[in-house]
Picture 1 (cartoon, rainbow, N blue to C red):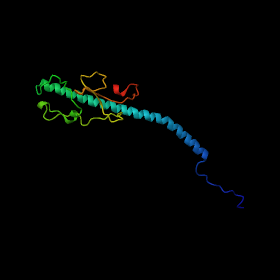
Picture 2: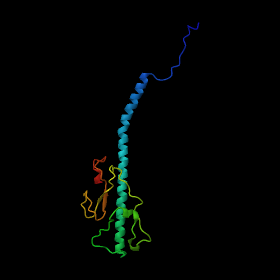
Picture 3: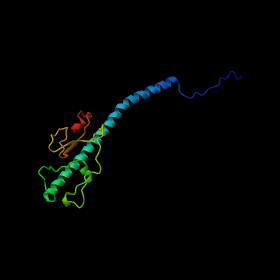
Picture 4: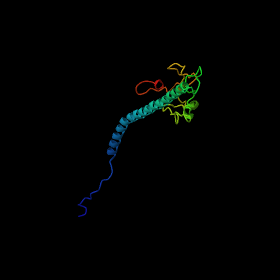
Length: 163
């Protein structure tokens, strides 16, 4: 009688067709998600670039305000060719005494933010007060502005170097 009752076999696992269909679905989902992930990464870098530019530019403006205040209160004497902006970015880290305007050196930055689109480690592009607003060559007198040296386009279609 044993030959009359067929043995039921448990089927565990997937057939080849089920595996191919599952892989095709995963591939379609991956191709849909990848462009979104790339845009998200670029948008995050753009936010970091805007934040870094704001931090440095605010520090430059604060330095200029303190220079003007120290000159006004006669703590330092103004030289004829001085614009009031720092001669290098490291001055913002090291601080300035301002002739006793403050009890100790006033520091403007804890660290110099990095350009997230700086692929060649060139650092920030610098503009002097005497340079044109769109100059790509630093005059070297002082640092009035910083910009990204990246030649890439942002999500809004503008060059990062124009931000």
